[in-house]
Structures are given as C-alpha cells and as structure tokens.
Length: 212
Image 1 (cartoon, rainbow, N blue to C red):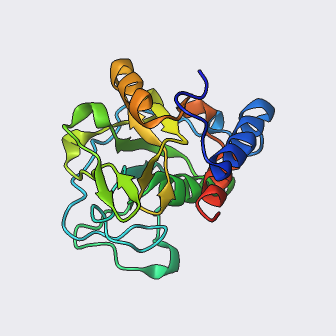
Image 2 (cartoon, rainbow, N blue to C red; image 1 turned 135 degrees about the vertical axis):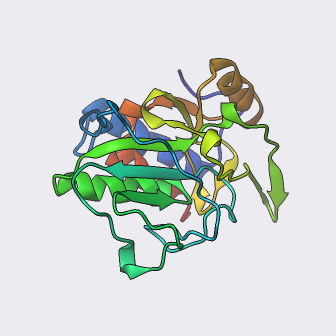
Image 3 (spheres, one colour; image 1 turned 60 degrees about the vertical axis):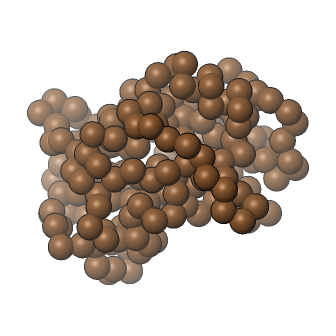
C-alpha cells in the first residue's frame, strides 16, 4: 500500500512523513492495544437528533465526513468541556463528528487512563450510497447518522491523505469493501491503513497537516 495518484501538496507530504514514522515505530498509543472486546457488544445507535460531539462540542451530521461512537465497559464518558450531548444520553457511550479530531484523540486519552472499550463503531462508506460534495475550495463526504451506516471500526480499511476533507480538516475515511477503497483512492488519492496501524503520531500528523 502506498501513495496513489498525483504528488500531494507539501502539507500532505509532511503529514505522510509523520504518519509513516508513527506506523514503523509503534509509538505510544498504538491501536493494537485499543482493541475492544466485541463479545456481546452493544449495537450502534442513531446519532441524529442534534447530538453534540464529545470531544469538540460540534453537532453530529452537519459538517461532512465520518462519524463514530464508542461504548466503554466500566466507565461513564463525559463530553470535553461539559457540553450537552443530546436528549438520548447513555452512560456508557460517547459519540463524535470526526475521527481525526474527535473519536481517536478522545479514545487515546481514555485508554491512557486505563479505560476499556466494549465496542467502537465508525461510518462505513461501503454501507451507504454517497457522493462527494464541494464547499468552498474543499470536497467532503456525507456524514450519515443512521445505525446501519456504522460498522465495527476494527475490521475496516482507512484512507488517509486523500483530497477529501472531514468535518475539521484531513480525515480518515473508512470502508469495508476493498473495491470501494480502490475506487476512492483512484479518484481522490490517499494511503490505506488498517485499524491497528492507527496511533497517536498518525493522528497528530493529520491534525497538523490541516493547520498548514
């Protein structure tokens, strides 16, 4: 797996250097240690209804890109900053409107505190019909919220460094079907990673790429 398509802009090349180093060195916060226990896992829930992201406080489904949700085994997640998170609050679940700026940073923090996930679900673009949309100078994937659009995060392939943005900048776009991954990268570029490839250094590199 490698770069697909034309040479990326300079900020994406810099992100690639950071991402590659993180994968090779297995830096602190490798998702190999974040695998949830999927036995008797709860099912994904509907993220519509004006729910607010636990990490950034932004409304789910409005900004484009993949959403996510995490059920924790023995802890009750709280939104960062104490933001309201919708009327259907459950004690064991946190939800997010991005992966790079929401789900993964939040989860790494909690894993470092000793928390365990019972299930992690993210948008599976192979499970929904989609078209990229243009806003300003960027393109975005839709942000579906229905339960059937979510899949177990550990079994998906993730495209990083494509020319399609998420809700807050560069994003990881998940797919369950290898053919869908190939079609996406053929059109939009990017690198392909598994769930266990994702670590804190990768996430931080993608975040910094969006700031340049």
